[in-house]
Length: 83
Image 1: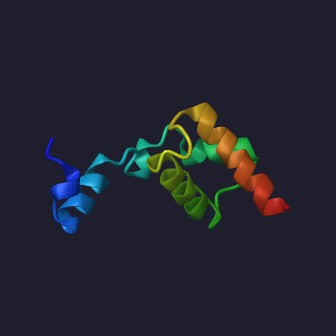
Image 2 (image 1 turned 90 degrees about the vertical axis):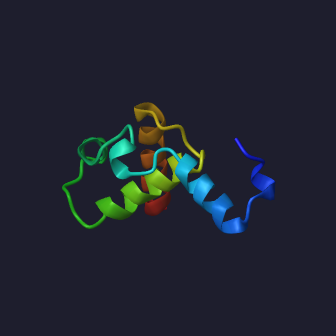
């Protein structure tokens, strides 16, 4: 693996993006249906932003990509939204 600090910025960015995991909603350990069940809500426009928030949090390492960790994160997002 090359020394990332010596690569041009666009190459560094591309390499960093390639290393992100999960990189897509399908790679999340918790799916939309499970989020609906957890929150006891019907599908709607609220789902996409929440799933994207989950994806970013997991990809950036703020939350582990496990069902349990993502479920706890969803509940904390819901509590944050209600307060």
